[in-house]
Image 1: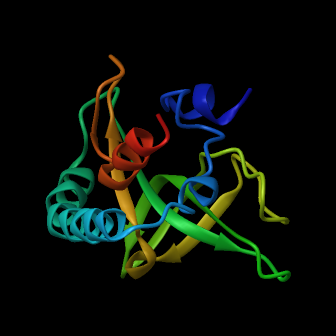
Image 2: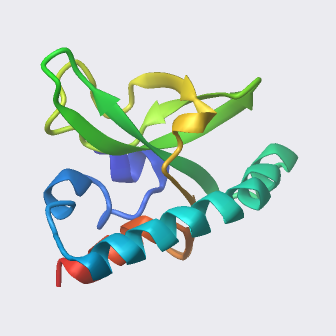
Length: 142
């Protein structure tokens, strides 16, 4: 079973690596990216509180962070969040890891909350909230 079905995560996102999409250049791309980082940071506290208070049945909370290996490779992945305690996020890797060695989908992973790059709440009907950077990068690849 792949990450998409295991975590109720939209299949179009699993296996999609931001690494290949971050090669774009130009001032407009940088400005939009910086705006989206700010939008993510400003909206995260509300999403975090909703998770901590208990999301409705059928909704899932994901955070995006960066994995790195001993060879210096890195890859941004979605983590299906199980808990946030004392600034530490614990969850399962919900992306198919393709670049970084030593990690796999479904593996338990813990990281500092300060390393969150984006957030996402999914619903059973396929709708999603957040994922500001990911949605922007999707528009750049078409």
